Image 1 (tube, rainbow, N blue to C red):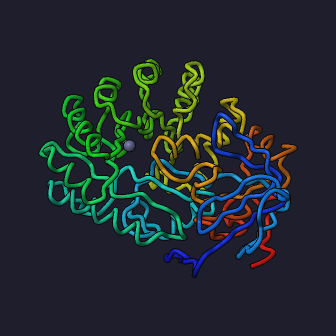
Image 2 (image 1 turned 90 degrees about the horizontal axis):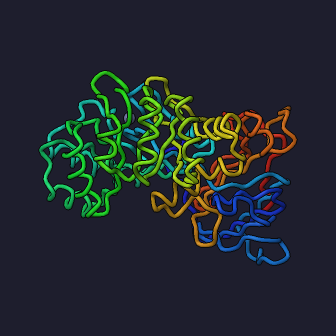
Image 3 (image 1 turned 30 degrees about the horizontal axis):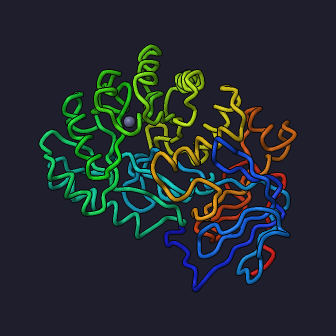
Length: 398
Ligand SMILES: [Zn+2]
């Protein structure tokens, strides 16, 4: 089990050349005119044509072999607990498995599966601070897990949010999974969180597992969290008219999850497109969950939304990269100078009916992953989880 983040010894310079297609992650310009990317010490320093870029002194050279480079995928909604173990289905190595599905960054929506999870204020604060520290120290396979997302309880006061923020906590777990299930209390605490720079999300829809509850449109809109967590339910979705009300009633993030109602995801997508608000759409898996873990969940959402939602594949990839990065103020998720050198290198799967990778995704197939890179360091080569890519990149020099 790959538990320790591979460390670079000394300065690094990564050159990826002979790229067939660069997906930027940015909806305003999803495809870049480039065949080469250069990254130094984990940051992108050059994007363009090989002849215009300085490849001198490269410590790693990758021949992309005409394949597609996209930003590493971001899973906006996971429930980690400790290390690369999840008690939900008692699995080990689930995060490493997601890396093989192209996911290089994960956002915790609360460490709610922790056995014996404390619900008293001092206990829940301690657990959040512990999770934030632990996941930043130990990155399974190199995956950046933004964890430490406390689930709010009614006894909390403003000082608690100030203290959490000062200790490095940047996220709230899904509002509604704890004792706070009413709009006014949620709104007050989300406001405190925002005041101290802590982002918030909310559980939308029916109870996910015994013990959680219904959060309807009135609570969602009143709470005013930064992200409308699984607006397509987790799994039980709100009725369509309530989903429409939420989309139209605020400008917050519209998170679509794999472990949700797929028809409702497509409905939300349609509303967002009608409103000209596709930049609000972000993707998560909401795993581990009752249906297990889904290493290919983000790719499957991209393919679902592109094929059945009739969204160009290059735009659907933005839902899983640039949109999330911008909404959550991450330094990854876009192929842009200065950003983290986190990439997924893909090609169309062998024997896909699609003529190109984008065509294959629009036809509902998954791409094959040939390599993942985090902070400019190669983490995996041909994926053990995706269908095999037609062409794969190769490391040609160190
Ligand atoms: Zn939820």
